[in-house]
Image (cartoon, rainbow, N blue to C red; front, side):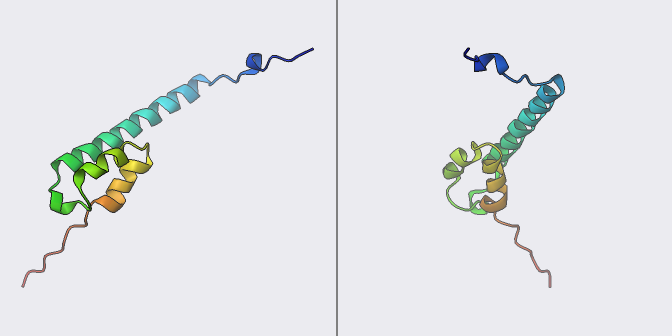
Length: 81
């Protein structure tokens, strides 16, 4: 009578597993790049205190993207006369 929902689980295909693995590696590399940039960049070139960006970068894709979009000050253009 009762239908066991656990028997109807959908399986991820081999191609889907490969895609998820690639996306996971890219996500980890993006976060590692953001952490490396934060560690090596001068504090004057970062908006806000550097330690405040550590938990932000840990938020999946949004954190590293936010760091690069909003946390890094743009290079000041120097005008040569």
